[in-house]
Image (cartoon, rainbow, N blue to C red; front, side, top):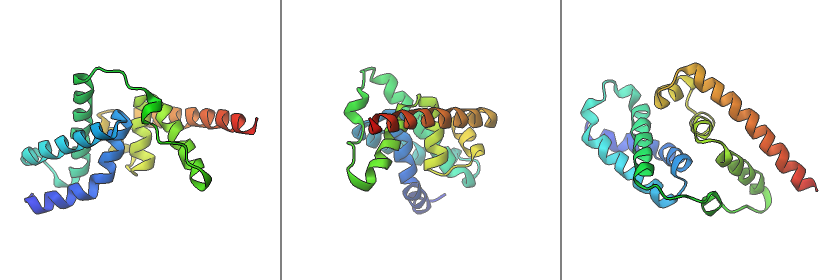
Length: 161
């Protein structure tokens, strides 16, 4: 794969990379660093990609590894409230409530939700990215939906009081 093709594919995957890094690191500056490191690593190791058809999956796996590496290197505690998007007013409020609920999920569930529902990966692709059996991904998505339903129902009750 030449540099131009690599650049086009990275640009096409940019939004997905941001979503994944945000679901792990939450801090915008750290997300940007992780994405940048991922691109550099992928560029240097692009010759190791066996099948160009799996470029995006391969790139996402590199990003996840980079995010975990950054978290291990920086053991500070991160306050969830500090990095959550501010509550929107008007029509965007519902989207903000859903975003907040997703960010409250355990990381293993949150990653599956972001990859499948936000970035549109099939469950088999999510399994490849996370290096898990497809059945495990389906179970995590099922648990995440149940937890999101409970969180959103709790939020609705609070709003109605």
